[in-house]
Every structure is written in structure tokens, then in C-alpha cells.
Length: 116
Length: 114
Image (cartoon, rainbow over all chains, first blue to last red; front, side, top):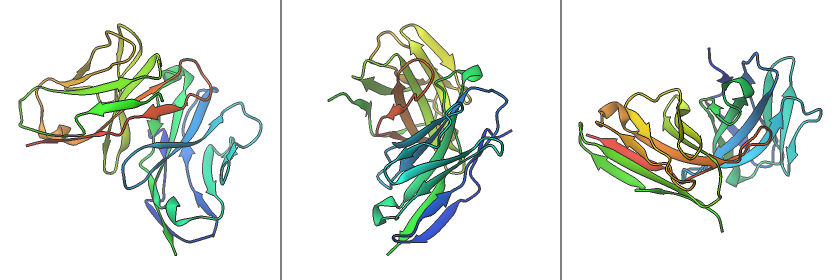
């Protein structure tokens, strides 16, 4: 079974609007971590945000926040006030303590395009 | 500044040849990883290492090998390159332990096997 599922292959959003990128995960491990990475057209992987399974509050980093719903096993990325520079591929990823706490499992990604 | 580098950035080779992709990090991280990125699959783990002399197989390790003789380097070798190994390869490194284990990625190597 897929550990990380991203159901939106592509999204188009108007500049300055908020955008939510969906991510669901599958694990029976009580200890896991959830990550979001951005990959612009230049190809590098840029870390955006992290949420631990025991964290009580949703993670936030500037314009990025992670909407963590543990019971639903979802970890959606919210970008507020989108900018043209946000156009990129976005990957959700997970680590599990039982399969190696440092090994990332990635989803297939969502290509976000910001429209001026 | 600490960094992680990969070489070469682009490589074209022929089926059956041995190829080695280099990865070098100056973060002094114990953990190092190799991923491949293919359309429709995201990034998939090939091999990883949690320290010198430690190597482990990942999800898609067939046809690949790694060795870790020092902290800074984790070269990836394709023993006999196949067209199915045409991909973009990313090396990454990170701290040990659980928690916010951000992985720092290299710029990637685009490998084409003809």
C-alpha cells in the first residue's frame, strides 16, 4: 500500500489566494514524521515544513502551515497569500520509526501553478 | 557554508557500463541517502547509510550499490547500467535521531542510459 497519497496531480490558483495541497498517509507506527518539500523548475528539493506525530499543534513556517488531522491521517499543506514564486512541484513525505526513523517515503507530488 | 554536492550533474552512458555517481557533504551528517526521481513515482529510496561502514537497501536497490568509507561521501554505483535506470538521482544527508530530521538534498544528477 502507498504510504503517502497526493491525489491532486496539478492545481491552478490565482495569485494572492490561499491554496491547500492534499496529503494522506498510511502507517500503523505511532511515531512518525510528516514533511513537505518544494521542487521548483530548477530541480532542487527545498524543505518547507515538518510535523511530528506527537506534536499537539499544527506546524507553521511563515506562509506555510500544515493542517494535521491525525484521525483522518491527513497532513495538508496550506500556503497563504500565494505568490508567483510558489509555482513548483510539492511533495509530501513521511518517516516512520519502525522502518528507519530517517528514511523518507514520498508521494507522487502536486504541480502548483500560480496565475497572475 | 556547509553544503552537499553531486557530480556529475549530467551523465550519458551506454547499457552495460559501470557508472558511479558521487555525493559529498560538508554538514558532518551521519545519515546519507540516495533517491531516484521518476515521473509518476515521486522520489524513491535506493540506498542509505547511518554512518561509516553502514549501508542499507532501500525500496529500489536492485542494480545499485553504495559504500561508506568516510562521513562525507556516499558514492552510488550502477554495476551494469540499464535503460530502466535513466532517471534523476538525488543524494541527501541529515542528522541522526528522531524528530525534525530535515534532509538536505543535493542538486541532483540526470543520468541517461542509451
